[in-house]
Length: 337
Image 1 (cartoon, one colour):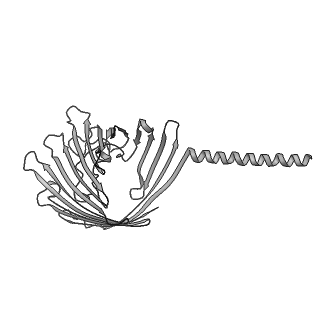
Image 2 (spheres, one colour):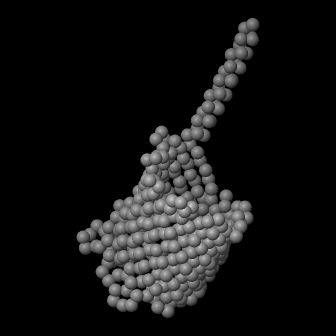
Image 3 (spheres, helix red, strand yellow):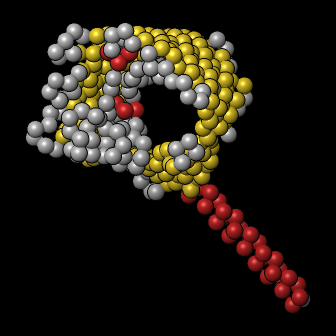
């Protein structure tokens, strides 16, 4: 009889310990979720024209993304860090706190571009790259710098995205102003961006945002830019219009005005093609304005975890320099894991 009771006690202990262990595992799994993903890419790039590059056309790039998220009682906290072997350091590191109806807070330690106009500088539909890749630029500034605070939420159907940094880099060192006349001048950058899905027209969205770089010295004038989109998608077709303006506060400096159009078509679930064109007018204070024209065609094909994609673009009067014409061709093979 005593042996029987002893065996029961031992069995109950085993059951209890097993249940406790299972509960702890379940609690840990629910408390924090971890994931790892990444890509490995090989590219072949050529450039031609006025600013042709005759270097090695082959390139490779591997990135690994680590992310973890968990419930902190009043929201979900997420930490993300992406490592890139091409730059030998972290490509991005950021934290977010999703508070549901109260919105989402973010802190971007390296890359910038989670919120504001920096995250919405060019949203035109494309099968691969933007129309300006390799031959021009977006024509937009934003608070995409180290240590950027962000906030996003939706009010009455309008999505709001805000960003601010107290030490705008404008490049790499945190003390410049984008290569204008304020080298060594610390600046603050703030921007906002709005997005609205038009009622009763499925697939139609309008977007608009503005950025301001505020330099610490009274002698420095602010740099400002704005960007807007009209986007529409129906079935396999997506079309878009984009406008952007940049005004340099430095005396005698150039401003730019951008207009761009794009259309993308999903040939199948695996294949997508797109074409785009962009006009970027350079305002020359002491001369004649020059308009740079860029055109590009893109295509991509996905087979499981592998994607083959390519772009060909060309520009005339590149960077506002009359007679400068450039070409850019890029092929890419990407494996996702």
